[in-house]
Image (tube, rainbow, N blue to C red; front, side):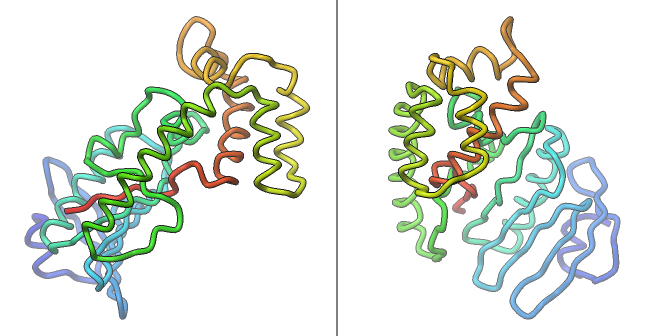
Length: 230
């Protein structure tokens, strides 16, 4: 059946739904305060407070990712949703896309759909002006932190995170032990060794980038969500 027909007569049974030249297997569960749509094993939730959330259960595959966002966007518009949150779980080559997005010119794929980085622990509200204001200031904060962190060495980052965390973390010790002797700044290391090019090293990328990501998550510098305001 067509998506618009499915949305007019939502059923709890698994349905084969046609949208934008693709078929999707959709199963829905109606709960007290939300409807959960399982779309080809990924999760899309519409809440009764007029907002929705996308949860990606699989690693990033460009075509599949774009198709999922398209169908979620169509459901949002049909249901007259005010804003939609994307729980950032996009992984490519075993590392977070958000980490590359934070340090380089690599653009997070969700941004093409006009989702914006959302600060951690965002206070949910239907006030669109407040959300837009918070997003604006979070952008400014991220720009400043990108500049500062790109020119730090690994040792600088470890010292900074230790000040904020104030307790011993195994991953910080590994980062200091294995990479603390490198004098190059983080921006150069990631540009040269973690992005495809003549110096690219998958083994370095695989060991180094997840440790950097854990540091950024520990001090809340990576957005854990992206948000789209309709």
